[in-house]
Image (cartoon, rainbow, N blue to C red; front, side, top):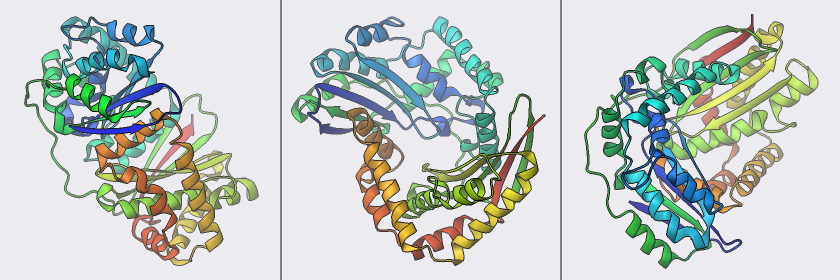
Length: 401
């Protein structure tokens, strides 16, 4: 098991963030939603902790706890006063390693997850994004919703979840990050004791590996939704995963250049000057197997075709026209400052270290600003030409009924 520690003495608090390489991407297709459902069931106790008892222990000490699941990971964290660390850590480890997954709680919590799935259909932007993912990744787990599908969850059993837990919640698949006002010696002693005994290993089905991810054409989907105020245009490109981290960071910089702030190219042209969109933004998401580059616009239906054509033209220009050095430096400062602002607290640092440790290598967590600052315009041209083609992308249109 990997342990990462950083002592931060600004306040007498400590965050423990445990990351597990057991997100939706390791689910076999019939078990879709199992990783997220397990996130819920982890909090339903062990042989020593009754359901709800762990939350009571943390909250009685004024602490907070929460969890999240994505395609590439699940993570669980607690933040408490430093003086409460020796008391809370053993319970936290017990919860993660010895989840009982009681039959009765399984049935009750499944209803909660099914309601989450139903509510997701009321979010037009979330619904559109999921369709975009399905269009980009039709044969990979990234194309399936992290929440899963109701029909498949109704077929799952507590015993199958126990197998999933015991197969994936093992030391080589887990990173424990401790950041706060606590010494290395105290951290390693107490973490070693709390995480000394892992569950007996079990086997569970694994998904088939997809050897290559990419697109060779434009794929388009259109959805008509009730109660939608304005249309949405969502465009997406697949990109290298963590095995080509330098290229990935180049796309992050291109995202900032296109729509990172009011002076970014697409924002200035489409919203401020031509007033063809109400809002437009871009995003880059680093993922283990294949990263994601997106552009999303909120606009009137009659402008959809024109806006998509303009975005295609601006994407094409990136590959042939050098970026002005002043514009380049503005985008580099924007991303480096954003990185600094997102690493100000113990919980932010713990999340950063755990994220990179789970999907790549922990050293990359602190390398980001230096890599961004040293990217060159010709590198970005090459990246744009290779991965941001106006002839290979997915487009999802959300239209008011």
